[in-house]
Every structure is written in structure tokens, then in C-alpha cells.
Image (cartoon, rainbow, N blue to C red; front, side, top):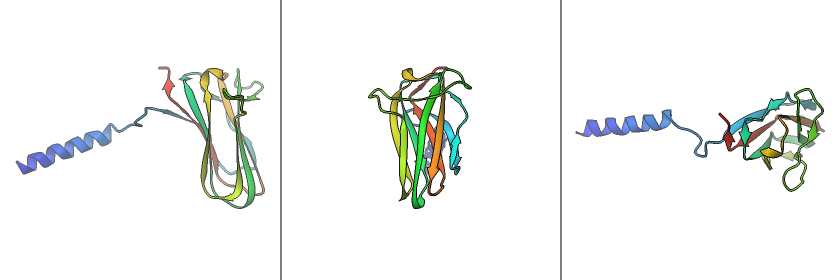
Length: 144
């Protein structure tokens, strides 16, 4: 009997691991893969399938000396078109800045995706030192 109980518990644990998901069922979209360039613009990312109030985030690695890293989120109606800075509902420009020396940091800004054009890019600039920076979007819904 003891072995059967252990087997049932083990199978239940295995099933929960195999089917594990984000508890909030969020969608994570990489806009800029971690890179160490002084200045770079990411490729265009189509965000038209995502809906709701999304969080845009930038993750900065540690700066070992005085430095500044900036991530600006921009959007356009076409992938090769003219990009403009995204503003959120409060009219705040979607620009994230990290000044160092500093430890690892993730900074976020929220934006209603209905405000965006189809394509989004991240423009990354660094001055004084380079470190790994990445940018991504977390959206609550995706059209299927």
C-alpha cells in the first residue's frame, strides 16, 4: 500500500512539472536579445497579435564604472518605416535609463497595446562602459 501511495504522489508531481506554465499565462516577447553594443537598433517585432496592458522591460547587467545605458521603445506601421517613440497612457515616453556603476537591474514601463502600431523596435545606446542589455515585452493576451 505504501508503494502505491508513493507511486501516485510521484506521478502527480511529474504531471505538474510536465504541464507547468506561467501562473498568469503571460506572453513574453523578446524585442532585443542581450547585447553589449554601444548603439544598436533591434529588428522589427510584429506585436499586432498581442492585446491588453503590456509591460515593456529592459534588463541591464552590472556596470563596473560610471556609465549610462538607455533603451528607447519605438513603433511604426511598417517594418521598414519611420519609427517614433512610444508614449504610454500617461503621455510618458517609453525610455528606460540605467546609470552606473550599478548592479543587475530590470526596469519596466506599462503601455496599452491598443496605442501601438504594428511593429516595435528597441534602440539601445550606452556611454562610458558597455554591458549586456536586453529588452522584452510581457503581454497578457495573444490572439490565436
